[in-house]
Length: 189
Length: 194
Image (cartoon, rainbow over all chains, first blue to last red; front, side):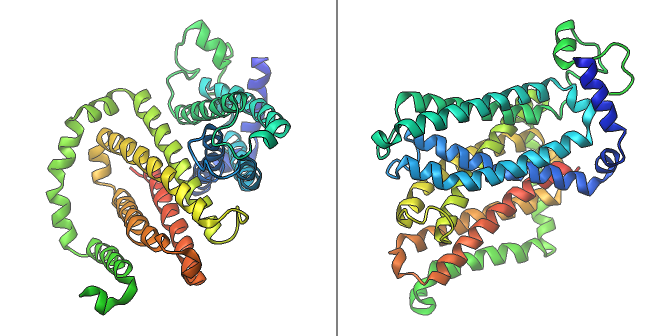
């Protein structure tokens, strides 16, 4: 599996546009800046929705209104974030694919998607009974806490990707080699 | 007395004058002298515990940096929701008074997180940022943002929102979004410099 990921990353790395994006100082920085600054739209609004469910923000605004009305701007933010994220991966595919932090980030993104699905499902089933309450029921609050926690760790992992502590070109423990997906005899990092 | 001369927008005009004066000062030769005077302070920042931790443990620095980003995200979310409501773009079926007031509470705590984590980060790379022009642009933008928020936007929005000229409300909302976007953008720029 790790060899397959490595080979796909090498294939991406060999494409002209990957090199162009990586080598373009301004383009790469524009993409990276957009990825980070979109935090204000995507994560900022998501956190406000989560804080509303916990009763820490907008306690006197119906929860369904906050969740419904802010959903679209939030999704626009996440769309931009995902597109720029894919471009950032495409620019540095081999190192990103073998980054421990990138891999943790991807697992957490899946966990966030599952949590968001369950959160909306539970909310739609029960919101009419607690819509105007300052705090959402316990199960919804747990979903909001998980969302806050997961996304905070995702941001931390995103920052850690920039550091080379566990990169494959250095001697690592067998565990790190396995988690990072380092391939025996690999020549490109 | 100033009220008699400047009318109902005394505070707005004075704050704008302070921001304009700071901007003008930053383009004069006097700025160089102040910059030199500040050097011992930045040297001292690096010798503090924050400076020591920031320089020694990259992981701690990056974690605090992530906290800074989360704070920025929440602050940005508050600005977009609150100003988006003033512009009539989102949550139009909720009274703007409710949105503006509640968003302001979260904005305050997000700003506290931003300042606390920002001070820590500044201590870790004090001498690097001392020589970076973009760091000073960011401080200027941050100062302008806080002055604007607490001395222009908030006092204005204390009044009955229905009684305020819609153009003034919308201009305030656009200015608020722009100034905080500038703070975030200059912050990101620091990462590309040096």
